[in-house]
Length: 330
Image 1: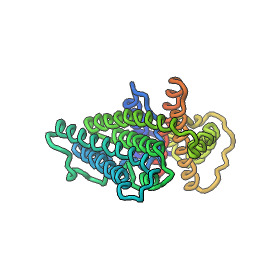
Image 2: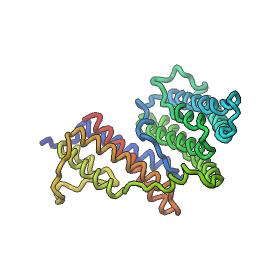
Image 3: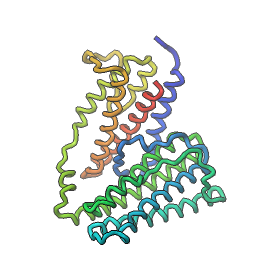
Image 4: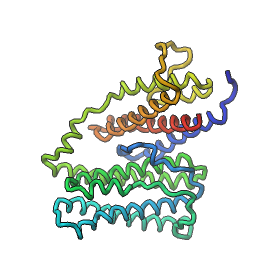
């Protein structure tokens, strides 16, 4: 049994988990954080830590320009189409979204000049920026005769939620304080922008009287968060049984479902499957819970309910990130 200080690997787990919690707390302080439904959540994480402010602005500009291009492609697609008027509502939304992204790109350039005395430069990129607005997602709505303005606004909300998660990760992983604070600024912008887009989504929803897709979504019963938390706790306990005491201590802190202390009695544990299967199942359930808490925040009817769901969502995102990191290095 290994004793003494945490291993270097355990310290990395603690640092990542704490950094994510602190970043989310700083970014959300004073703001009404919207729900951040992402599918799957961690596909938007940066592939590496951002090393400089110049690199950060280059990433932000590339993402904004890519988003503008993708939206614009479907804003103008109907000009040469066969005259299907059912596409006009989505085209008008995508035109607005393309314009917003062009304005965002201009603001990013202005910010870079103010901070660095030069515009963003692709030469500062050390890796290909994560595409937060995949063309395929837009095509699924823009090319469909069943697409509505509500669908287009809902997609745009999801894209800005994805941007919030991405920039939160950038801030959490940043070693440079200026990179961290600038990334947190981009994350706060994503929150504000997402809230404005959500209002447009609500207006579009109200204009749909008999939208079958919306009715199915409203009638869909979510999985039980309490049941998933219980199942996830069992998976994590099975996982932790094969870790050192110091590494197990990391898992004990992962709210909303921390492990019981070693001296606390608990039901006999029956691990189903291999360690890899247990890890995979735990990650899947942790991601399901993150999405459930985010959906709860989106459906909250009062401020207290909103803040409670947001707190659970933030904790769940941090837990998921720590579990992913532990699985990757273990």
